[in-house]
Length: 411
Ligand code: RNT
Ligand code: ZN
Image (cartoon, rainbow, N blue to C red; front, side, top):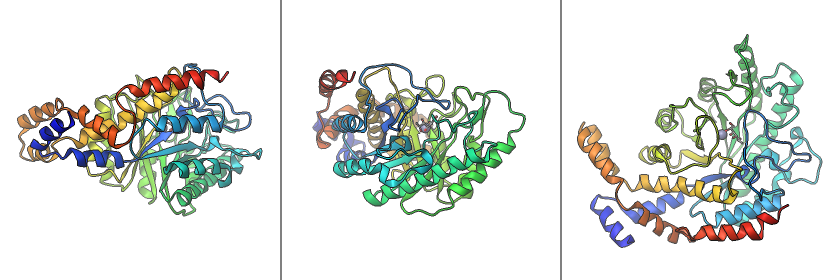
């Protein structure tokens, strides 16, 4: 089937072997927090709060670093291609009783060891939620100096952890800052909190660090902070533009319901040399569903490929579904991202772009729809072989067995 597919694609000027190689080489950063419902390993770890929520109580959530690492490695064995592990500061593995304003690179050595063993990179995030120092839903924009200072210190230290990851793995580390700051009801003053956030960011980003790609993540609203978000799209976009080395991260769930990030990638590429992403799926709101191979996912991948931006767009995932087997979520979500990339790589880009330039919209329409019926799934099957994973649907029974043998015993 692959031989036939290869021939058919070749007739359209597409080299399937090259597409497979490229698709396998693009790193996808897998969010650790899908494995444990965003709880982490701090002493007295608390339930998730800060405008985000996991729902569902599917059994088998990872409760310890060892369990999370084992689950992740197991999931990774069904995910072909380059990968990174995306960690939050709350996933420290430390013998010390340390609060967030005291974290040290050493507290994350466990993950560096895992990354080295697996030959993968790491990304990082300060954790500015699920903590008593989030006072009235505010962190870096709080009116209280001590609250701001606490989070500034946390973020400064988180960036140093990111630099440590980069140095140890030899791969760039995205250090992404998201804060939940906002108001439930209409604020009297929108400007003052934003000015405070800007000042806090200046302090956080004042230190230059090797290997760290800093990003700031905007949002429209969260649960409990429906009326106002301090770190809005315009706020962070402007901030990033004025601060070289700081980039805006696009999360596909953080815009108005008909607004899509696939449309924003090219716009940002005219201004920035890096675009970190949080690929997720919002169902009516920022619900963080596991990504399906849907139109928007394909459009995101298409943008990355057509804009020749595979080394500029840094793909990270950000879903957390506690209602299904978490390994299934990791495997299907991550592979969907790579399937979308492969599909994009298998399109006759040259002709489609030429159609647009020649304003032959009829051919563009007919031909791009025709491309959809070509046997990309046979090429994917080959990609699974090259990537050395058990493909098709066979992996599912292995995960089911792992569920019985391992996950269901976690009671
Ligand atoms: C929240 C943001 C943020 C988090 C993770 C856990 O709306 O998307 O990225 O989901 O940091
Ligand atoms: Zn996100």
